[in-house]
Image (cartoon, rainbow, N blue to C red; front, side, top):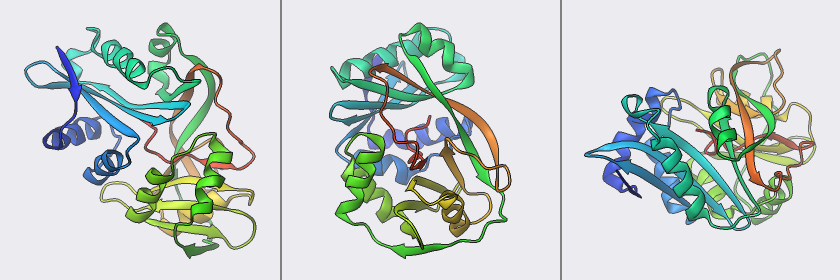
Amino acid sequence: MKIRLAERNDYAYLINLSQEEGWNYELKDFMIMESSGCSKTLVADHDGIIGMITLFDYGDIGWISNLLVERGFRKMGVGRSLLMEGIRMLGKKKTIALFSTQESVPFYERNGFAKDRDFHFIKFLGGFDSLVKKGGWYESLELIDKLCFGYSRGRLLRLLAESGSVVFPTAGEGFAILRPGESESTVGPVISNKENFLYSAMSALGVGSTAVTPCPNPRFCETIFKVTLMYLGDKPKIDYSIAQAFAGLEYG
């Protein structure tokens, strides 16, 4: 088995692989990650692709997502090999974080990761009016994002905004990025001191839009499944007083 950088002609296969798990990644997501300058996707190749992992390098902080192995090659060490190579390539970070499905928590614990807290992958049900102002990307939003999540990812956020749109609360501070998609429309990141701004942003995309949030409100959404934030090194420093949803690309 060889672990190598993904190439563009691999993306169609990786999209199918992710969609089989219900992750609904699209070509534009892989292109955004490729163009961001802070992300790399690796594949495990054994006479064809049998797994993948995506890495985000934010300086002192690293994120891992999309760790996925073909069903017929699971429980053979492929996932661990991808994870160890990803950690090696990220280098010495203060923190390496990821979202794990509930089923995969023991796997990450065996490989040194600790639990932070649970999050909810939610679907918007409606019943909340959209109280947002439309706008564009501003350099100051990168600072807001960094103060909230603890790392700098300006180019990635700008690309996400360009692929969708940016909205702001009509009262209060913060912003949300809306990303309509063919198979799934996603809201994130969402940062605000305005209560329920997340659901205003989701309402702007419509019923069925999704988000990864620490604060679900069953009046307006249903939890599709839970994920656990896990980490190596220092515990992630996230301001949960204003962090209403993550970007979405971190999941997987």
